[in-house]
Length: 372
Image (cartoon, rainbow, N blue to C red; front, side, top):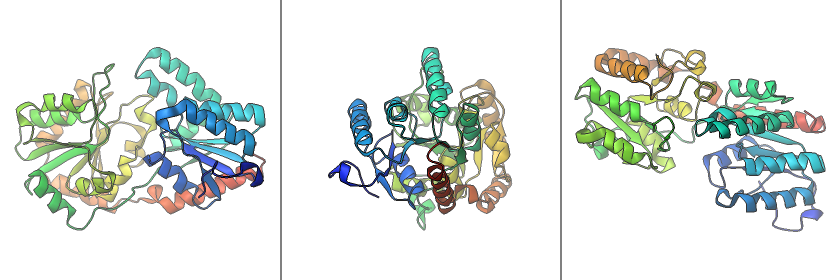
């Protein structure tokens, strides 16, 4: 896969150009490159730290090369506005791939941002040649907004746990073999509007359950890590483990040390549209899953999902239900759910199958002249 802008752009045939708004090296950059791996595509290195500079550079390349298709992973406005401008000024078609409902997601931070994000999301979908959603719910949303074509690519796990990873990681973290470990891995950013950071409900429930054999383990770093430390109190380092950031290539090994994985999703226009990349990683590690009563918890359940009531993981109803579950959880039930997770059908998260579908999707768009 080539990268544009390194030689005389005008002398080359019209390319397909892809980029990720999260920037080069991010998991989303790897995702879109892999999805398009069977096609002749040039990757544009979008620099998230210098969004405007990257946007202008992308616009210059697009105007000079007039790509057959622009493909964007993510919905960042710096990249999205370039797509809209190229569609209007140069009739360059584009495809958007996204894992979030933009308006509701931004609305978590402020009502004004949510309204602006919703308008931007509608315009982006209405003018695209096709939309790739991380879930079928997002595809339906995009097509309701006017996207002429859609497909689902749910993501995949990047690697499997190494042999002996469970025992090794548990030794490193000081976790007894008989302990039941519930946890998650993610970016630990504090949301001031709702007063929440990923993993807060796990820490609270483990402490309240009062069992010495149930341990919370939250992997990740961010401005919310200190909040989790405060919630852990005197149990930090014992029943609550906060190892910090783990290199991506080692995350599967750490997940193998868990017994239960948590998907902290709210039952609203943000969480209800998601699967999250963690679900494929949990299944690869053979972990049953804790989550709310979101659509995926019904659609994908093969006996390995606990659906807890409550509108959000930061709500008292959810935390109370999680506390009760952990307080009464029997080893036999856990083993049964772990067996169901290990036997679950994972075709949805098969990388090769998603790549084949993406190839067909883009090929059909190009055959139709980029009109969708």
